[in-house]
Image (cartoon, rainbow, N blue to C red; front, side, top):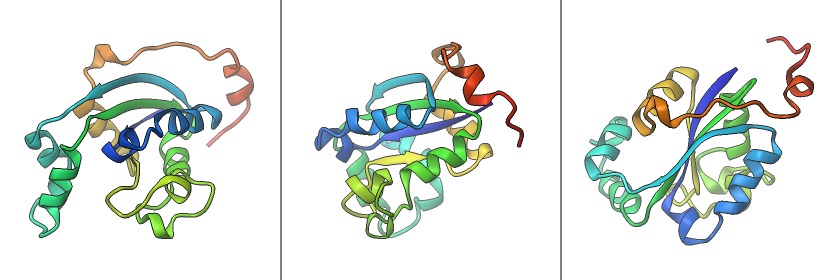
Length: 153
């Protein structure tokens, strides 16, 4: 079973799309094991977006991420990282396929509604950044045996 990080960006909250996005995650069959609203500091996002911090457009990212809270969500599933990336769609909203969160709901590269970890390794780091271990809840879905019985990767 895999876990991954998703966070709903300020534009998702500002446009009142939170329920729509969470509903899509749940309808996909992914299990929410942690969720919280937060307003991370600029330093927090400098760590999270460290690979972009030296780019000329980075100050806009920092200002955007500080413009409203984010909702961090820890998601679990058989293939959670890949499933969540497909559900989110590609980063550039204008390239995202219809049916994906970004393809249907996002406006631009920056205002793209959602972040989803891009690999198992990244997911582990990001989950640790956004959640303390005791903030993640173990629980069993009623349909677990039917969702995952007999499947192998």
